[in-house]
Length: 270
Image (cartoon, rainbow, N blue to C red; front, side, top):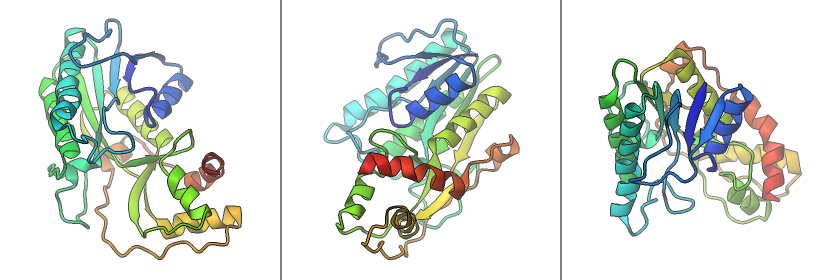
């Protein structure tokens, strides 16, 4: 399959690019794609849109001091890209959305597939509106899907826990926190399943509920660090279930995959 991919150089996109190529797909990266510019999509069978413009290190709050530009680039730019894909007769589009579309629901709310969106941030609203715009274009010969991914972890330069691991190993204070996480390779596998099956609609994508206490206890075991991990967090977390992906045979790697990847991630944090 010939896949056009935006955001291939990003923290998430690098997992997608590697997985797509490993499966033998021809990947056309779109590093220069910008709002208002025609995307070179002719001949592509699928588009995976993972690019997102934001303040470095932030998604929620990623608009910084320019929310209008943030919306123009990420919502309006995405909608134009989707329209270009349909005009170019690209058969499938998968949009990388976010669990932030649910952030307005009370903490601890179960989040099965099909939960109505309730964004609480501009980031979540932009993702939800781009999802809706894409779904409105769905039709014969143009299959559309959005994947509502949780936080993505995995080895690589500048991975999401680089600062956390460095702070812990240096003995700096660590605030308790618990959150849902998903390995980048598992996200890529989910997208490939969607493409392979021509699946449509919105899909939750999440794997582990990780407390920093447990994560850093494992880091302590691997490194022999003398500093104690932080106490367990006591805040409730809304956990997504992923029945739609599971029905397609998706099986994320769980704690075993996390343990197997920690040595490489720690090497980037030392």
